[in-house]
Length: 325
Length: 254
Ligand SMILES: Nc1ncnc2c1ncn2[C@@H]1O[C@H](COP(=O)(O)OP(=O)(O)OP(=O)(O)O)[C@@H](O)[C@H]1O
Ligand SMILES: [Mg+2]
Image 1 (tube, rainbow over the protein chains, first blue to last red):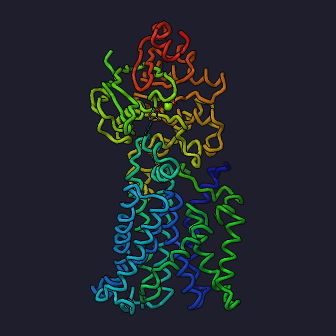
Image 2 (image 1 turned 90 degrees about the vertical axis):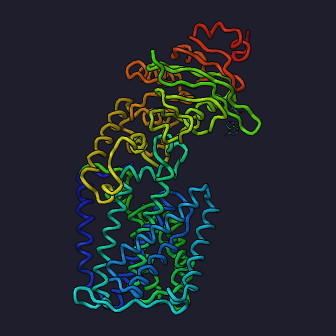
Image 3 (image 1 turned 60 degrees about the horizontal axis):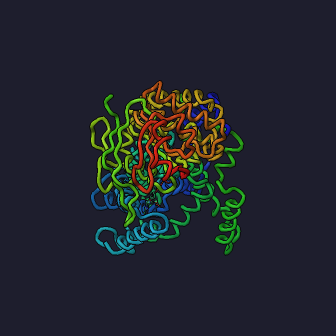
């Protein structure tokens, strides 16, 4: 496999910070509507990232991702609306709530529930959470949902999508960077090793249970943070946002981007968030075209869009170690 | 010579089947002890019991006086017993270099948080391991394969990488389950040479499961012969060659 040269590695490090710096300029080119769409892309990036490390890197068929997302969103909304906690502060707390969800989901995997059984049990976990949002009325508002309180940040109203964008961007970049750091370390290798051969992994003095546990917890943390962003993004959390549709959309983003790829999580989220906007030109056919396009991409690129970039340049090759550049 | 690994009265029963029965032996520093016996004799089960993958029904395993029998596989590996697997234990999607690095997992002190925020500290201890992994691959003339996914290697190359990965952390004890299977005659001789050197130069105590009797006779200091879960003989290659029980039960031509 073609690996990036030292120069390409340096270039990659620069790009990693240069791209977000350039993205700071995005609000100059957007209107209220497109800014809202771009904000959604950032949230989907985190949701996809948290998902892909569990099903791609760790190789566990766990579908509790939307549960983590809902837990984060409701956690943030309840803290902000009922307890008056500043929204900014609810982001890491929502992450911790999501991480607790990850802990619960890992308990199933650690008890030896794997593959289809893990899939079903984690799906049930997601539906149970949705049921809870519907029925814990005093806390969640039931079907009416929970509105986010008005708030200002540095004197600017948090209803402004541009203001939200800057916060979302910082949170997204930090979490993507941290996750990339994790994967390119002994931890990332251990995660892959568990996926490839759990028995052999233990023979290398790698505590496999802890690896599984921590992967789920980190996934839950990332997606939980995304939930807090989402609560502010739409300004009102409803149970319907955290159902099967969201899960399927996230799954599609993972696959279209490329399973187990950080770059893929970004690409999948951006492309599949933008796609429906372009499909609006075909009223009544949107879902059909969306499905066909996703299928076409997967047939042409089984390893997702990230594999296309990898083929173009070794700069995009993601490995599970990092050499000093 | 004080013993490194002491196995005493080890027995393993699988619902009715006695796969291992009352096996005892010692392994010293720098000693190569071969384990031979027909298919199903319990050789791999012996390895699994020592390395914590199956719980013995009775008996004990000590490493430098420490009782291992109640520990998990990763705890036993941490203590210094490393093993290979009969069916190959490489991670096919990881590159050769990454595979070797997994063998050095416990050899870094980078904490989860340091890694997360990308502290220089974490990169530094990683750099030392990368350098070591590359050196080891060079030693085996495998450095040109460093970036190849392990799944793309030939069977023989995979065996070699698995050994490199297992010895990367300088373990005091190695359990090799048929490391030479599927290798060409030349590669088999090289493999035996590697094993002898690990024992001779680094003082590693090695347990070696191997079917090719002539290889074993040349490479091992001592041989443990098993059949139907029991130890039927033990001794130097010369003693084993003349052992009546072995000739009857195993070599099959008395
Ligand atoms: N996990 C297990 N559960 C049930 N039976 C097992 C298990 N592992 C091994 N056995 C049985 O124990 C016996 C010994 O198997 P083992 O793999 O130790 O033999 P071996 O000497 O390594 O043989 P080979 O030379 O074919 O590798 C066999 O009858 C096998 O079917
Ligand atoms: Mg065997």
